[in-house]
Image (tube, rainbow, N blue to C red):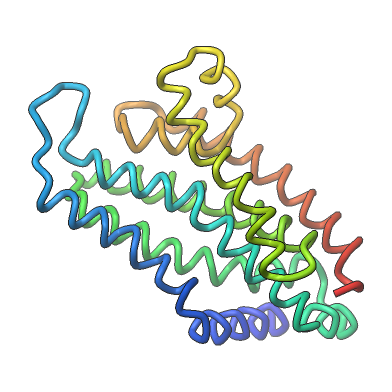
Length: 232
């Protein structure tokens, strides 16, 4: 726990020194607030009053975090911080819990802000936060794995962007293409999209799919950490 806490605090300090990453946790809900407040949505049963809130929340959870986490991990590699941590005996789960835990906390706060902007009912509020936190956990793991395989922050951005675009936009395309929709069902971002756009949907299947994504991505991260950690 002491080691995990030290890594957590280290990441918090790194975050405060990097406004380009910090602003990401502000800009998405800010845009959602502005769009909801000043853009008039025509009366249409297919368009909810919280369309912009759910849209920006989905993009944040499925795209923004991947590049941010990948960059943070790659920066540790570039500055050789990871090498020192590995030599000091920091295990994969300790590093992941420290770095990922910080990003998850920040993402949870942002998710709460989204929920407040949306003005959801109590039940919708709970469902929204649960699915967002679960989904952001998967994005953090994916970003961390990409970061581990990158030589520096710039390379991480280049590698993470295609993944973020595919993961983030596939659910949107799925709404217009049945073939894509079938594939999208295995993605955690599709499950986020389903719940935030229809709170009447049951939570069991979406959470099960997200849990499976998290499990697979955790394995990938551990493999990447063990293969690349000492080379940082």
